[in-house]
Amino acid sequence: MKFIGKIHFLLVLSFCLFACNFSSSRKGHKQGDKPISSELSKVSEAIAKHPKDATLLFERSKLYRSAKHDSLALADLFKAIKIDSLQSNYYSSIADILFEHKDISGSVQWIQKAIKLNPDNETAHLRIAKIFLFTGEYPKAFTEINTVLRSDVYNAEAYFLKGMCYKNMKDTTKAISSFQTAVQTDPKYVDAHMQLALIFKAKHNPMALSYFENAFKADTTNMEPLYGEGMFWQDQNMFAEAKKVFHRCVLVNSQYEKAYYNTGWMLLQEDSAEKAIRQFDMAIDVKQDYVEAYFNRGLCYEILEKFEPAIIDYNQVLIFNPDYQPAKTALQRAKKHIKK
Image (cartoon, rainbow, N blue to C red; front, side, top):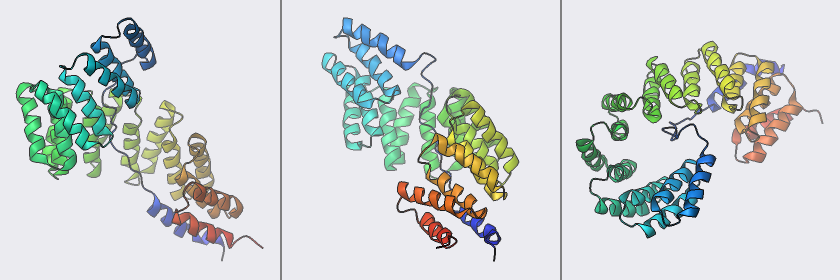
């Protein structure tokens, strides 16, 4: 029996293995149009002239965080506290960094110091609310959030955190309401738009598309909203619409490998193995260790009865991930077609 008769089996296998996980971006709001490196240089020059200016150190710590240099940000914050130990924002910033690095106990200690210095520090209250959200202590989180909202009814982050609490509590209606309030308060709140988009996407509700668009407009460097739009259509097997969105993705960012991969995956489902290979090629060109792209390209070669390149791709998958069982199975299957 010709191998091509097994196409259906391979496509079903590929579909079962395909999974696309994307979360809301933690980028939130953009820092601005000026390059961070340029801003860092200016602030560093100012610090060289005024090394005892804690406010400059604090400003540079924020720029370091934006550039994802958290260790340097912490160093500046510790210096700032040594110069001026009465600024609660310095303490809450340290707490925030520690929280993001999963040091929960350390984060709590620094937040408590911040609140002790300034009981009205909204940032500190929201940081501790995040911790309660993380640990599932939602009533405590609401207490901290409401403390902030009593003094600042337009605090978008407070509404966002309230929405996350409701979402985790499976109260979708209240979660939607809170996220909508967040974006009404701050139309450029990317995370809130993304959460709304994901909720409506799960319901196959087209409203998801407008929230994805709003998120992208708020930060056009973040490709996840456009990817979400594409997945909205792909999940409903509306491949033509999905391909249009993924094509838009690569027009915006030619190095966005997931757009090539997903386009290839859809072409594979449509029995267009040769076209799919070209898409997987481009995905791999961008991301050299793209395991799923190698695996699915291997499937394409198998469908076309090109077993030697299929074997090469499956072996490459196992180099990157020796425990990838589907590749082990596929490799053994492909080897049976190579004449000894």
